[in-house]
Length: 571
Ligand SMILES: *Cc1c(COP(=O)(O)O)cnc(C)c1O
Image (cartoon, rainbow, N blue to C red; front, side, top):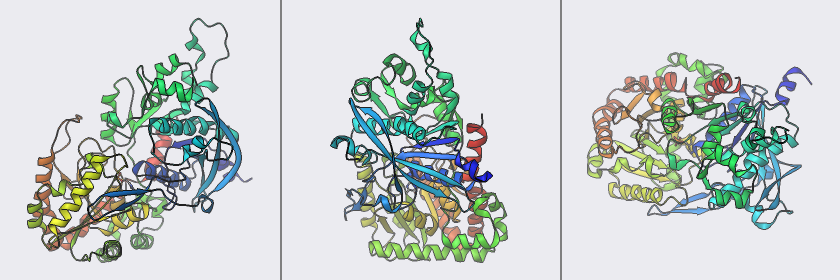
């Protein structure tokens, strides 16, 4: 074995995530969290970091989305063939669930980089013939089912995952990185492993080596909303998981009244971070007793750059994919090349829109894109607050493309989609608006590269980071967004893009700024964005360059992983 192989053959970081966006047709992701996990792993492979990853199998995926003409979402299981993408391994481990022994097997998917780096990803699967029917389905549906189902999945991921890595002989793991609280049970497995071998202690808590476990754990939180944290009643935990550790210990580290997976992560990690500066602060105020750092998210540059831009970057910024800092030299690329690459990507998107919806859009009309999880706080319908004003401002000068899935149980999110459809109908040909069904990674790349402006209108401060705007920036697409998450750090008004609404001041969730934000949205569209697009192409291209040179330059997972290594992993 040569030195390089020996290095990657012994992973030191185990990355755990409930979902990972490995590639478009492997449906083991639902949205931002999973795509971030995939980008993390792709950058780790490029940088040859000694990492191994663990996730759930999801044989039925998240769901396949169809939308009827009224905007009503329909959900179907995803059909896919795991054997085409990954290899089933013979090893087995078991976990206890509801008093039964459940067998867990693993599939291996390898992420290979052209630099020679490899990150093995293990997808845990309970669908084996020796398991009872109800246990076989544990690894079927991502975020499906009820609390009990979720709890079982998290037992498989956290406890089964640590056991599986042992089974494979990964004895050199120095850090277990929990990507969100879903993987929190790995701490309990580690607690058991490092239990001190002492008898007759006066306080049974002394046998638990919390410090040693903390030394091994890194926890990244992803939601600034209390309700977004996974919580389970202790009755349910006792029924489903039994006493993996004594209840008294579990309550000490997981919360007195309910088991809060975020608290498990916080109490048993010695490095904790939020995913943008603002999110770190919001999390810090939610959990004042802990030291919460922040490492702002990024996206994997090569994955999220469309072919048209890849070829001009290859020509003018050789080596950019493994060194996104080279975007600082964006000024070397002639304006005409940037514009031609952009128009080519735009025409491809317009062809896709035609194919899916039958609607003919124009490559010469300012096009706004907005695609994200359809959930109330993202306020995708903010643009429709005043339909007649939108018609007046945008008539013949604006077209809009939406996409995004609502979680099957998110009624508000689904109604929001219906409002967008109703708005589109009322605007008719004055302002063409389409909503593309089946948002996934492939469609995301076509959207973020094919529109002119990327719009994001979350309710502050609920957007922990957001990453699709970073993807847009990689393709010279300018952001027009509420100052929340990453955009607080990436925004320079009139230079990298535009803000919607006021500067963020406080961390409270109660402020409601719908009307102020909508006012600002219309005002800037009418007086700044539309005139600039149609009247000053040179200035517009300057902003595209700034999106690349200032936003893509920084908001990539290569920079992010270097920070995880120096700040979280090597401590
Ligand atoms: C990037 C991406 C997301 C996350 O986008 P946000 O801006 O964080 O909402 C969600 N889904 C898909 C398919 C993506 O590619």
